Image 1 (cartoon, rainbow over the protein chains, first blue to last red):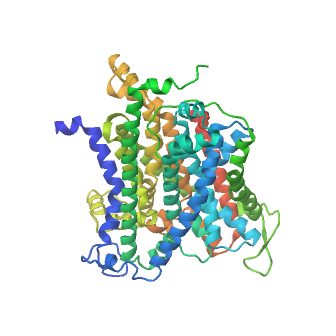
Image 2: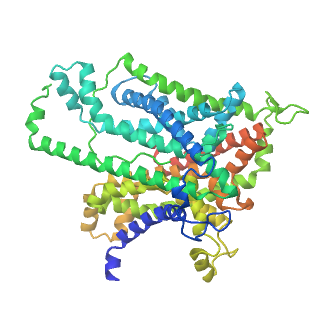
Length: 280
Length: 296
C-alpha cells in the first residue's frame, strides 16, 4: 500500500496508457474469433479464419487498397505543399503572415462534419462528379496543415549555424540546401508524411461526404457495422496497427540514437563548429 | 487524428529571415489549395444554406435568399444541437481529468521513458477510429464486466450503458483523449522544474504548489487541449451512431442524414454553418476568459 501511495502518479499514468489500448486489444482478440451470429462483438470460439483468409470477404481488400492508394497520393502532394509553406513561414519574410497562419490553423480546428459538408456543397454547386478524385482533394486539404505544423517545428529546432557554415565553406545556396538543410529536415518531413498517411487512411467523415459511390476502408467498416463486421476487418486493422507502431518505434529510436551521437560529437568539440562561424 | 508529437528539444534559434520573391513562390501552391478547397467552400456552404426548393421537384434547389432556413432548421433540431454541446462538454471535462496526470508524469517524472510514452499516446490512432469505437460495444455490453459492476452499485438509471448517452460520452472521451494529452504535455514540459522546487522550499504543500504554480503555468496547454477535444467532439457523429440509441443523436448525425440521405441541402448547410458559428463564439469567449488570446 505504501508503495502505491508513493508511486500513485506513475500508477495512474500507466492505467491511462492501458485504457488507451483496451479497445485495440479488443479488436485484436476478436480477430481470432469465430462469431456466433452476425455481430463480432463477443467471444465465441478461437479461429484463424480472419488471418488465413484475409481477403476472403468481398470488398474488404478492395476497399483497403483504395484507401492505401488515396492515402499515398494525398500524402505525396500534401507533404510537398505543406513543406513549402513551412519553409516560407520559417525562412522568409512576407506580407499577410497572420492570414496565412489563420488559414493553416483553421482546418485543424474545424469539425470534420463542417469541412465535409462545405466541400460537398462546393462540388454539388460546380456539378463536379464525386469519386476518388474528390476524396483526394479533400484529404490533401486537411493534411497540409498538419504537415506545415510538423515540418515547421523541425525547421525551428534546427541550428541555423550549420547552414551558415556550409555557405562559408563556399557551398552555393543550392548545395547548402541539398547537402545540409534537406538531410536535417528530412526526419521532420518523413514524420509529417507518416502522420498525413495515417490521417488520410483513417478518415471517415470527410471522405463519406465526398465519396460518391467509392468505398474506402473506413466507409466499408461503417457500412459493415450495420450488418456485422467480418473478422477479416479486425485482422487487417490489427496488422496495420502493428506495422505502423513498429515503423514509428524504429524510426523514433534509431533516429534519436544517431542524433544523440551527433550532439555528443559537437558538444565535445565545439571549437570545430564555432571556428566556422563569422564573427559579425 | 492526432496532432504532431511536440518536439522535446527546447532549442529555438532565431533564423535571419530573408525577404525575397521565393517566399511567395513557396506559399502560393499550398495556400491556393487551402483557399479553394477550405475557404471558398464556406462561401458555397452559406449560399447553399439560403437556397429554396424547386416546387414539385424534390432534391432540387435554386439560388435564393431564404434566411428563414436558419430558424427553421435550428428550431427543428434544437435538442440535437444542445445535446452535442452537452456531450462534448462532459467528454472534454473527463478527458482533462484523465489526461492531466499522464501528461504531468510524462513531462516531469518519465525520464528516459518519455519518448516511448509519447509514442504510446499517439499509437492508438494507428488502429481504425471506427473499429476502436465499435470495440466499446464489446466493453460496455449489457452482460459485460463494467455494466454489471455499475449495476451492482445501482448507479445506472437505465440499468445499462450501451445505447445510452453514457456510452456516447464514454466513446467521445476515449477517442479525443490524445488531443488533450499532447497539448497538456507540451505546456507542462516548458515549465522550469526549479519553480516547483522553489515553491516547495517556501513550505508550500504539494497541493498548494499545484494550485499556485503548476496549474496556472499549464493553462495554455489546458486551453489548447480543451479546444482540440471539444471542437471535434461537438461535430462527431460516429460515437453517437455506433454507441447510442436514436435518443442520443447529435448535430453531426442530423447534418449527415440531411445532406446524404434526405438530400435536403439547404437545411444541412444551415445547420453546418450554425454549428461552426456557435463553436467560434464559444471558443472566442472561452479564450478571452482564460486570458490566453495570444494562443491563436
